[in-house]
Length: 267
Ligand SMILES: NC(=O)c1ccc[n+]([C@@H]2O[C@H](COP(=O)([O-])OP(=O)(O)OC[C@H]3O[C@@H](n4cnc5c(N)ncnc54)[C@H](OP(=O)(O)O)[C@@H]3O)[C@@H](O)[C@H]2O)c1
Image 1 (tube, rainbow, N blue to C red):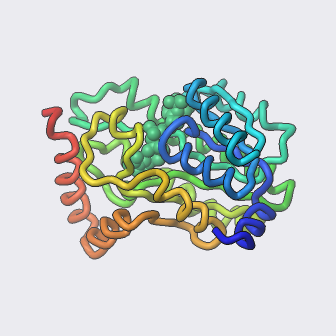
Image 2 (cartoon, rainbow, N blue to C red; image 1 turned 30 degrees about the horizontal axis):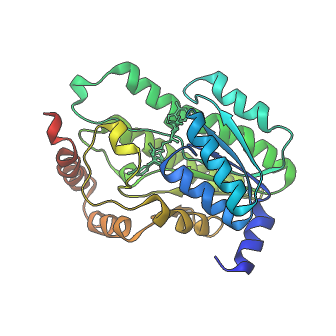
């Protein structure tokens, strides 16, 4: 980002940003990119040592202030903790990157894990986005970035529930873009393709070619306030282009082949 763009971005959304899922992958890369722009950061996750290491790095390299909130967002108490501990800070940007996936045969799925995924991927963004949108509308400005996915636009065999959580996020973000626009709050759905992070290990997938979190962080931030949905990174754009002209049932077939490949070691 050019200096002039950084200044406009900071004026619109600064000076504190909350980043959930900051302990790893995309959230971590977004937090670092925000620190480069000049934001002070509230870093949220369960992994205290990773959050502390990131906080130290940001303070030492970019001279931003940081605050760590160790919270499990799969429960109401964790989300409430984020709201309570940020109440007195001038937060103007919310980045909702906490999330995880599952994969494999639906018939063998662990329903406790599947429900936890709904709590983290759906309920937490719902609760936090409304609470911060209320604060932002009082300030008369703000921004919210949701982590959707390229899997949000069709059913995905072998990751059906995960894709459904992202379809929810995509639809929520699209609705809020128009509605909250009236309150001068910008809303973005970021839809990456496969990214090399902690995601694949936790989802028990073996991905082929992947993007790096660092490759997609700046394209995501640059799209806020300019687009409603961003497909960050060249690989994402290629995958999106390859699926775009297929009917929905055809997209499901192709995604089934792709996810079937990512999970074939499990069958
Ligand atoms: N990687 C991909 O291919 C890809 C593609 C499209 C979209 N996405 C989405 O991008 C987002 C970030 O994923 P990533 O690739 O960065 O994965 P990652 O490296 O595994 O990071 C996931 C983050 O979510 C946090 N998290 C998970 N469960 C949590 C819980 N119960 N409470 C609080 N925080 C929790 C983790 O923090 P702790 O472990 O510290 O709790 C971690 O910081 C997710 O929403 C994912 O669905 C990923």
